[in-house]
Image 1 (cartoon, one colour):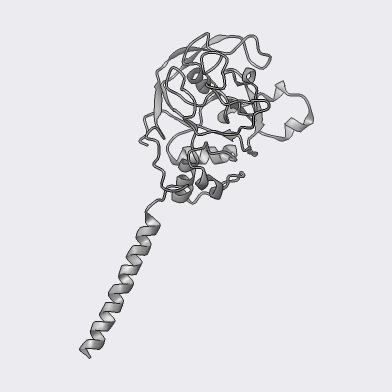
Image 2 (cartoon, rainbow, N blue to C red):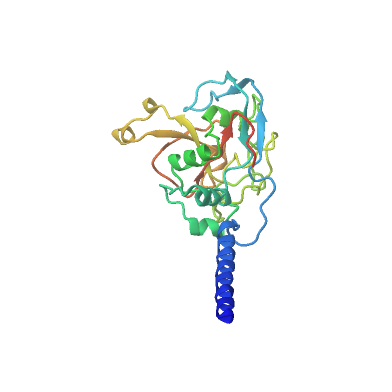
Length: 261
């Protein structure tokens, strides 16, 4: 009887140990894409102090003349949200993206910007982390390093060394967040690579045709690798339906107070 009891107890202990190992494996978050260590800059923010800053460009058809606009202080992510961050958000929140975001592909490429997400998908991530999407004007003053005469986040017309844009005969695509130098504020990826969602509605009166009347159009900023250098200016505004997604459209967040990352 004692041997049977001892055997029974050993079986129970073995089963409990198996469950502990199983739950520990499930509970420990795994880095998507293997065992690569995350860049310590992932999730970092820069503070934009309150003040009056220039926005606009009188040489463009789709923007108002250069003018001063008052801003309250805010914190902005130094890079677009990465696949690693978005997969982690899905794992923690059980959120189901509405766009064409692929978890499997995202795990293979953890340090690329998260793309294939609708405006609602971007907002869901921001809300979960007690952040929000930037207004297009917040995005612009951060991209132009708070300076009046800056029309490119890179300081001048971007080159193949300073920005990711359409390279004509060269094949390229989305690149990791820290592939190119930051602007003067230490913010990355605001000239090409991926478009970025903002929280600003695009004025429908600027568009002609019934097609655009069917959509809630948001302002995209920054341009993508599919654009020529001239089109990745900090003042360029692009309308896009909030319910749709693209493989070269990502986002970054802002917050009104510092958020731990």
